Length: 352
Image (cartoon, rainbow, N blue to C red; front, side, top):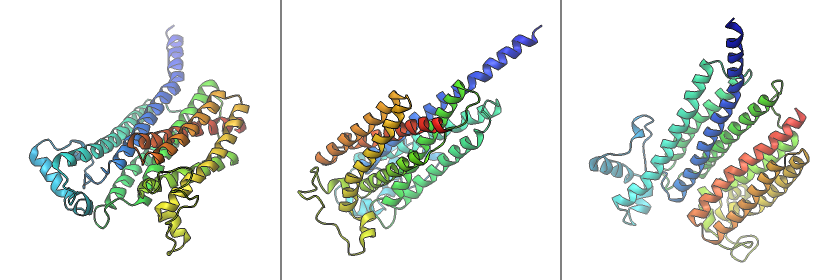
């Protein structure tokens, strides 16, 4: 007599798991968004090199005594950023604590994200609540998150010996990996949402068109990361012209055009400004197709994200890289990635 009710209850519980998984993935995505914001603050406050060692476990706690603070400060005094820039400028212990705080928060948040993903994943796996076909994808996201931590230290290590700043190449890898993780989390959550509506639904596919949009947006994000890494936002504070010229004066091409394209702050800034309109055109086409597919909300999200992003980019330049505007520009960049993923997923469902 008790078999049927228990079976019915188990069926209802199993059916509820995709919804729980969606909330989990979107919660982790929100943490990744926060990580992108804190990463922007860390970069703009030149805080990234304040912690000169990578201690995954013991580094969880900040210095808790005056002696511990002085020890960390002495380690920082050994690197070029201090000996060539902050030392001659007379950096105080209080100023060091400020930049240390942001780098510590950035690393702590990375640990929190790792636990927020890994522990629930292990629980869902144990409870056999992960839908068929999703385990490899979730494991890939877990591995990518672990790799991101390694990339972060690889980036920091580039600025501890021969440089006064981190490599802009490595910074770009770090930022773009964060966007890829964010996109993967949102895409997987959307796949699960579709699965709730239709248990027979297949995962959405990336079409040729949406792959092209992703590629265009990737290039824009890449140059944005290089602009940040090269401090190229400071080379011009006028728009649309750069210091009263369409093509900036000061581009150094003696080592070749390609070298300048990826290393010269004037040229990377120039490309980031004008490739933005290629990205806007691609996103307009994406949002129109999404609206035609009947998803007006997603279309509005895409339009809003790129519109706000363009305005923030212009404002950041014209204010000489105001930190609030610059951080907001990076934050909306993450929202733009998420809204683009949303639109692409809708079109992928249409052809799946």
